[in-house]
Image (cartoon, rainbow, N blue to C red; front, side):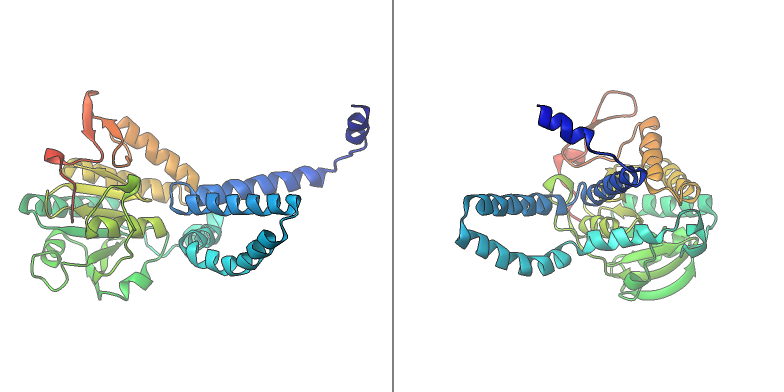
Length: 314
């Protein structure tokens, strides 16, 4: 006990020591915030377990097992770069948002938010009524030019009528996504990355998986309409809220886009404000399979089901 007291008394921390500890804690917190709610979290747990096995093998003198793990670590280092590519890309994008100067480098111009929200909501309602599938991506801070190159460039004024034309069945562009920047449609027929599965492991169709995929890699907002059920969904950061009507979707889009403009330099603040607004309106970013309450406080629709207990397939 006296040795411990002597050891602690001999420690004389410098101011830089506390700064070092604080920055390290922020770095660890940032890394975990990047992989939270993603498939990378399980991979990190697996890598940590392997490292624990390696440390144990070193302590017990298991030379053969230690050499195998050391050899695998060299290959695994390159494999991790490939596996964690979406998370690494997201981290670099966050670093690129240089605080209050981020608005100078933002790719999108602040357009008439209310008109954009109204036009997209009106188009989505028409799709739902006619049971036409649609996938509309609204660009925010992260530029989507790379994805636009996979489709047909348009640079056209946004309108509900043009969106209805793009996603008309048998139209050459209806199978892809439409990307919107400000009040203009950049491209249509765009191919998006597909998520392996929906949140919670629920099975989704290609449109919904594309919506999850693009929102996991970027900060875009996605409006997706199911061709099978006509359900309108709004997706952000891999989370979805479904069964919105025209007014609910319009208000949600307008609010989120305004929050994006007001909190451009504070990513976590935007997430908190989004959650608070959805809580006040009775909605919630839900994971399929987790029940949520309806606006009137009664038992709401389970977020993993659609009308009649079916799952959206498109």
